[in-house]
Structure formats: C-alpha cells, structure tokens
Image (cartoon, rainbow, N blue to C red; front, side):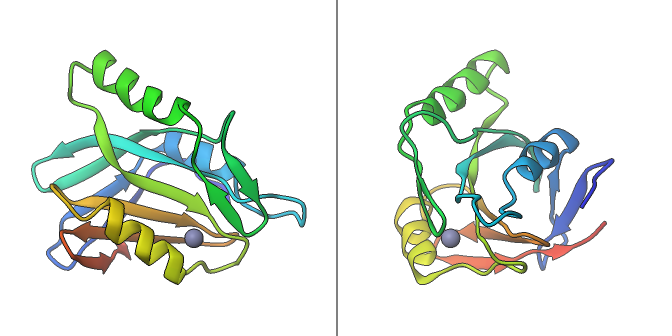
Length: 155
Ligand SMILES: [Zn+2]
C-alpha cells in the first residue's frame, strides 16, 4: 500500500481518528510482508482536538524489545522516553494515546491475548486507540473504559 496523505477513521458518534502521513510512513516499514519479518510494536502519540483524535507520532521497535514472528513484547525503555520527549517538546499537547503492533496476517484481528492486555493496560481515563497493522489492512479500535468500538474507514 502507498499513502500520500493521512487516513481518517470514525466511531459510531462520528468522532474522528486521524493517522497522519508521518505515522503511516513509519507503520509501513513494519508490515510483515516477508516470511522472516517479526512482529513490531510501539506507542501511539498525538493530540485530542475536541472529540477528535489525531495520531501525530509513535514509538518504534528498538533495543530491549522481544520480537518473534507471532509475538512481540514492548520491553525497551525508549518507548516511555519517546512519550516523555513528545510531551516536553510539545509543551504538553502531544500525549500517550494508545498502542500499535503488527500481525503476520492480511486482515488482522485482535487475539485473546491482545484483548486481555488492552483491558488491563488501557481501561482507565480518557479514550485510547489500539491499532493492529496487518499485511493488507489495519484493525483500529477505540477503547473507552471497559467498552471498545471498531472504527470504520472514513477517507
Ligand atoms: Zn496481536
């Protein structure tokens, strides 16, 4: 897939989630298109604009992460460092918004392990975005407390 612009998704209330060009370009690098590609994971960062969410940045795999074909554990300390740096440099407007990881399947779906992990780590506070990068498509969901909603592609 090639992207020239951002992608926009929406929830059932018409609230938008935008993935910027920069974010799409980085995610593209980690699609598991080849047999030897391992899973990748990171944190999603960005801004809330009213009820809308714009994902402007992300952390990438690095030192300390555990990566296998069907497994990823985001253990590297650089992920939290990226969150701290973005918050500082933006004067507090760019925040932690959720997480992303890849799956070696064309049209990805959350595993039971994903669901468990999300419900433990992302249940509190403001809405969070979870994104799975498949080979041909994304799975993107908005979690709000204990409920979650799969977003639909808008443009
Ligand atoms: Zn997964």
